[in-house]
Length: 117
Image 1 (cartoon, rainbow, N blue to C red):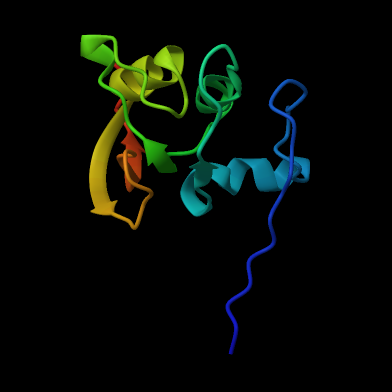
Image 2: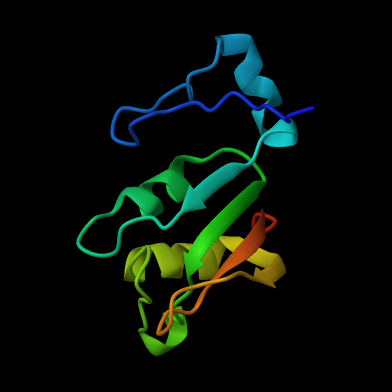
């Protein structure tokens, strides 16, 4: 058997319901994950915009992680994206993947940090 999952394609600039019926939106945080694969780096902001708008608890990120504290962008996401990951998300799992020489991309799963009290 071949596993199959429907993929929703959306534009972060016009996203409001994540392509779901209104009642389904309430189940989003528990049942869905946002998968970002090599989001474009600066000056594009789509990765950071999606992180900011994502109401769910889990993000799967495939790309090169920069060090937000050191001002490093990596080649994916950009500085604002890295800062949003550092501030609002906790890295819970990472795995090396095959990659081209000179790149340091990997597969990472993040969980939303609890809101500050």
